[in-house]
Amino acid sequence: MLFVLAVSLCFIIAAPAPKQNKADGGTYQFFFMNIFVAKLSYNTNEDTLRTRFEEFGEVSSAKIIYDKIENRSKGFGFVEMPNDSEAQNAIDSLNDSEIDGRTVVVKESQPREGGNRGGGGGYGRR
Image (cartoon, rainbow, N blue to C red):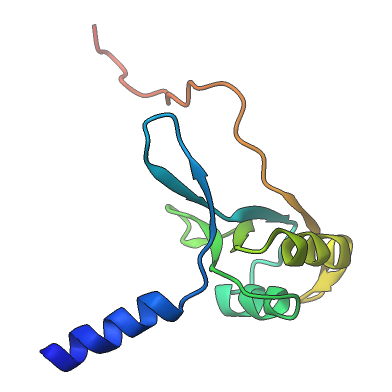
């Protein structure tokens, strides 16, 4: 048990620290550049996406968005990179490049506009 704790502690100490920004509440938030990747082939998987971005630096996560009903890719995803300059280099290099036979669009992710994401439904409710 002590060995596992020591190994875990070593990993935490050795892991590079992401950028920090003190929020108004007095706590620290960690920020990674979130990159939006569009026009992906439906056959592209998260490993392929991660590998392409790792050519430019460390990748914290790579996620392809799937349609819940059809259980297939929606053709876009997100990649998080902790280093802004590496992330910007990846964006500049991979935008309008080809991944799995498709020319993709790569740009820094922007927050959604408008806070209301309410869905329809509720037929017949009063």
